[in-house]
Length: 146
Image 1 (cartoon, rainbow, N blue to C red):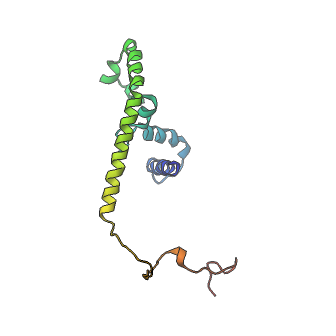
Image 2: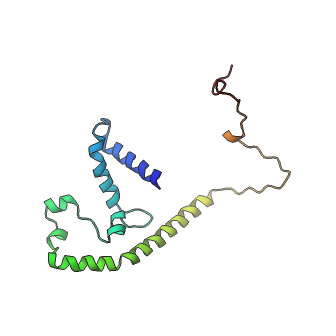
Image 3: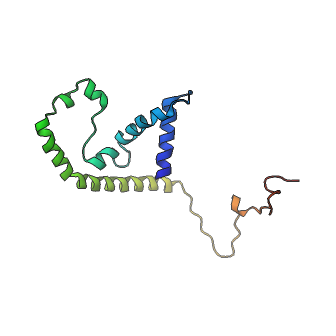
């Protein structure tokens, strides 16, 4: 999971930087914010909402008044946060069920295209992979043929 997250982080940072490839340190917090506040396909939830139990308020919504921010009252906010925390476990369970369902759909899609092969003891099999190649021994002989 860490490698996938790092790969997403690098990919999104490269998109923001374009061809300049400078100033990537300044872009990381923005990219992380974007990754944390974007709903994931498998769960239909944002990672932020699964951790904290509430949706995020974007910084631009605080600068430019939107309906969501203007209708938010501080007296109701505490009560709404308590309600969100009460149902957080349920939301997480629903997200696990959705993720499992999504994985099963992806697996069945993949398995439709796989052709099954059965072998019996004694059948000849052609193996084409790097593990079946015989490598030369020794430091100097690797990668070079004389």
